[in-house]
Image (cartoon, rainbow, N blue to C red; front, side, top):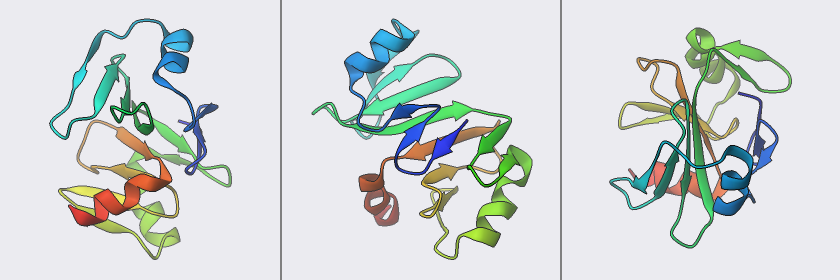
Amino acid sequence: MKLVPFVSVNGLPFSATREDVLRLHGQPAQEGFNIVGLIELDYGSTVFRFQTSGRLEEITQQVATVDLGAAVVPFEALHRHVRHHDLGVFERAGFVVSPRFGLAFDPASERWVTALAAHCLDAWRAL
């Protein structure tokens, strides 16, 4: 995952629409609503989540590394890296959330990392 915090994931900007994702990736393996009411386009190793208004909220990918620009961090070292480089890091519902890097992940998961749009941080803090 190449992440420019709050700007883009693998070159796809957070300003992208559902139609943009469909044009780039085709039809998802699954599409539906998750438990918090976001529309999910599930492509297996990547999931795009949108508000019903069409605003992109999150991009979750199964990754070996996260390219943060200044560092490429293996998933296994991500928890340590964000703790060391983000004084605002916090935990919610088993996830480590990094406001500096705009991501959330469960260190015990199978390498799933969620990149967040900037407006999502307050919702994560409120959990």
